[in-house]
Image 1 (cartoon, rainbow, N blue to C red):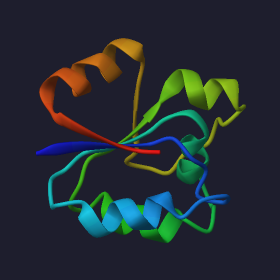
Image 2 (cartoon, rainbow, N blue to C red; image 1 turned 135 degrees about the vertical axis):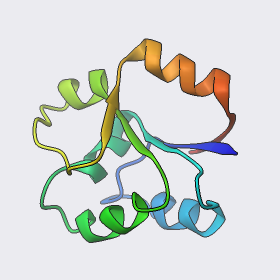
Image 3 (cartoon, rainbow, N blue to C red; image 1 turned 30 degrees about the vertical axis):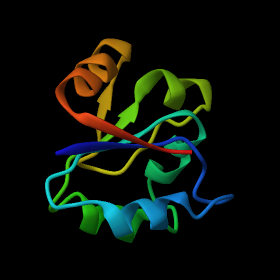
Image 4 (cartoon, helix red, strand yellow; image 1 turned 180 degrees about the vertical axis):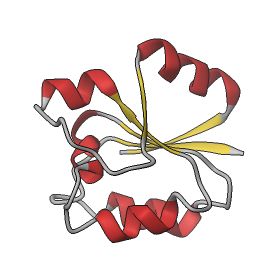
Length: 98
């Protein structure tokens, strides 16, 4: 399995859509940096992410959420700290979508 990291805001980039074309069932997706804007509650990306998390674990980096003032995220999105980020990177092959 491959960990897919997304660091660009889906409001400014099509990286999320590109990533999803290559993501296999069960592959975890981690939103980092400005990518965390995708996991906000009630965004236009909410329906897409709700369907993704039915077959893939979805994570957001907590320090990046905090740095951007994002306090409400979609149900089912797991947050990880830097230690959790390292654990994911050590567990999976990584594909960075930049």
